[in-house]
Length: 530
Image (cartoon, rainbow, N blue to C red; front, side):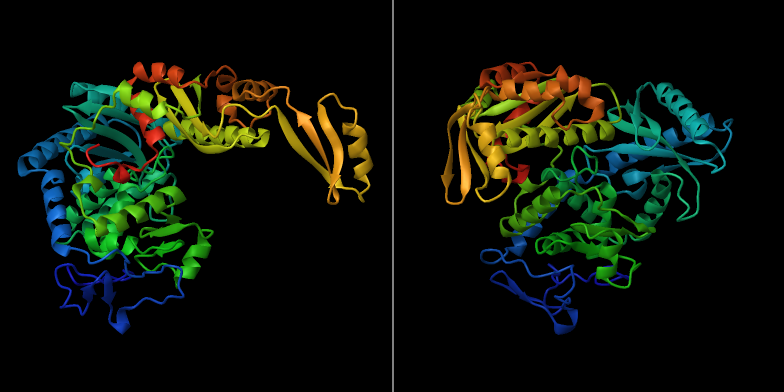
């Protein structure tokens, strides 16, 4: 209920509709908070007021959120249509699973069960609960058979997806449906990660008082629009459940954004007060940049997937939104993304030093593949920098069996000579340094003494980034994930803008990724009109 704070909640300091009622004065970007409501500045979870330029226009904030809510909240007709499909799907799953050993129940989970989904992002999750005595292999076999039978019965096409267990995904009338298996267990006795899901659903539903479902929709639309939504490794952002918990914790979207605008990592939120202090909670999880203790499992950090980058982007987006409220911060279902033209891509490539690697990848669970991609990206970056190349940024794109890795460098070629610093002359290995370099074929000048150290000017046998990287990859001198080792050795390497432009001309998805990589801005910082 509005104005009340449950156990473990942090009371928000700005009530945008009742500032005077709660004793909060807002003026010139500052607020005065009653002494008893101020948080201890010594704690890791620091809640300081937003210091924006000038006064936050509360009317504008409320106008923007009201307009966004009209666009992301499903209509009554849309909700009824989705729930009819969900109910029919649930009954079909129950019927199909009756004769399978170990099946205890089937139930709706996720945002549809909670009533927190947003328009254009409908997804129905049906979970089949199995007895904990059933073996993992038999559980997986059963769920794949049940999911395939049910989705095909509805006229949909199935796709095998992977989490901790494989599950079945399908599209029915443009709506994504998932048939997932979990074990029915008591809290804390988890046999798999998805066993918590029914408890997550019940926890959120039990706290959805008043208009909080719509507040959660605003939070999800904001995170989607800012590019920080999604807990998969590829994104490293906020899960739907995490978005729900943050909204519940602060009592609404605007209060949550205002609080996030003043976060200073490490951030710690323990809604149910599982730990005696924020310090204890942070130490229990190794002091990451953000901890949100799972209300149904004190040993789990719901925010474990959130990278420092995505957390920082979310904080910045929150600050900018409060300073200049706009719909551009939100995911809007009707908004059509602008498809970048090849002229725009070629213009953005002009004068830039972009190294690209295109490789063929095997089909595997997305989180497995992207774990390998991220590891390989960092390995290649370290190898390039070890050779003397300065790397500004790097990222990757993947679709079907193709992956493209991009690196923006200061230059694609190294100078023909480099300075090699030796030891001080008074150390024992100074003699070895002189002996090694004085008559070496790649010595251009030296050794000489400057200050107390020896120096020598050396020549490079290779200066092109393509040649150097190819040699290192062939020798195995790059830290590459074992799952991509063969693919990376056979990768095609691009170093010209025109080569990358040709690749972009054949795939619209890669074209957009390439442009976004070159623009190097989070979505909420894109130029107006883009």
